[in-house]
Image (cartoon, rainbow, N blue to C red; front, side, top):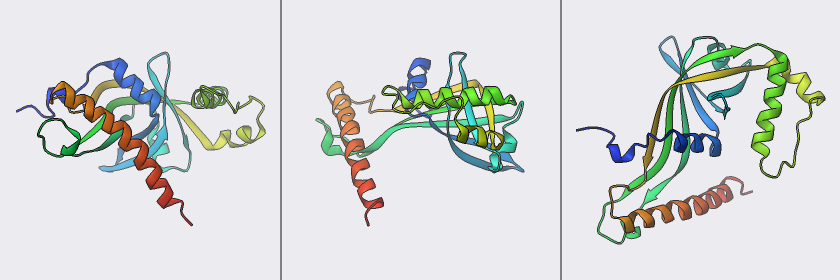
Length: 199
């Protein structure tokens, strides 16, 4: 038996790129002495098909962000529990989610000018579409931190889209599961943040 089932795999690169662009905070995994190093960083997918990132030089993972280092990246989209009560037909409880698993190779970018421009470009991307804040090239705070940030790019060697969205159900149930994914994500974020930030 193949696992995961083919109907829960999405090999459409455009779909996976959309996940990366919409949910750019990545889980970055490398290894040191046979132990995993895990960091959460926003990564930007550029026109050349590379992932661009920046990391604090004091992060233990920073020393792994060097040429030819193999790396694993996970991007996470929306996810939620799907109750049988959601479906029009009889079903069992399940969990729906969207994940993109990538494997790649790192290249360190040493140029301070490239780093500065990359920080500006990333900010511009993350500020879209309103662009309420613009990181100016002469920003003094940014200049002060350039020596403490490493820039890197990742060449993607393999793509795996894990889109578990009740695709094995009847069309009506697929639509109902999609609506529940939308509803549950909105309400769960509000409820969770209300608890976390309560006084």
